[in-house]
Image 1 (cartoon, rainbow, N blue to C red):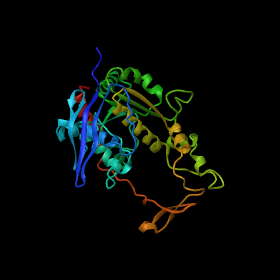
Image 2 (image 1 turned 60 degrees about the horizontal axis):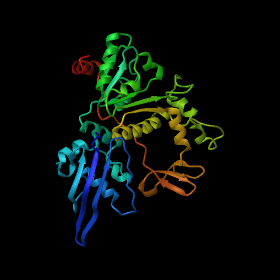
Image 3 (image 1 turned 30 degrees about the vertical axis):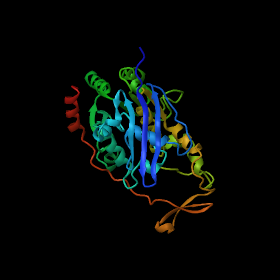
Image 4 (image 1 turned 120 degrees about the vertical axis):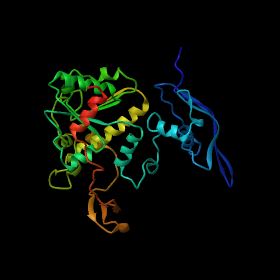
Length: 350
């Protein structure tokens, strides 16, 4: 017997009631999507594609409303669900990637604030596991607080069998695992992402390394600086000076992190299991080779007074206003290992 479709849209009608009359943006749309299936909705501009998406996840604002039809997600009718239930599902089991960046994030709030808020809104716990013999070297600094605020931290000694079993129990409870080791580190602990993936539905394992999980460089040590140079970042500034110059402090780390975040969000929202392999060198290589924004032959960041801003980018087409650089501040202190360690050991029977 075949499984029921994950999503069923049945005779959906969404109308907008305006002074000029009723606009029938969605008028009798029906389709179904099975688990693991990808469906494309094609139509000209204004045909109702976006409003169909809004109708499915309950984001149609007045004067519009869904007037009839059903949207069944795993058998649950979302049309009749209350807002509290929809908020629980949105960003957790259902999501929409908006085509307009201004509709994606609140422009008056920091991006990290909104990402953290989304995680906490769905009662997700983010746990950081450190090796007791090699703790995070940034502990006690503002950088540690910036990167780890809101996380629970625990230190384990991987030389001891009991702590290795504790790591296994934490992994069993995890929906998403992010690890930044060379591949052989996890293999030496007897942990293999592909095997972990089979133990639960929809899990995501993200591996971030300098040169990827496969190939001759899989166990090479890498830092953000040398991985960036290996990926070709130095060529971006070559020609602006007599020789290649320093092109950003550990720039491969944030660039690789952006690629990783996009991949994890897409994988999680698909509901399918994925092992994601992000190599810092390849992330930089793709960013450097991408089309990007045409800034002219010799772009320069210069002081200016364009539109009231003191920062602008000087290009072959003139000055382009940019935001003033700002130092990022941590929203709170990073957690102490011992405090969270005791709680996590109790919760997961470690």
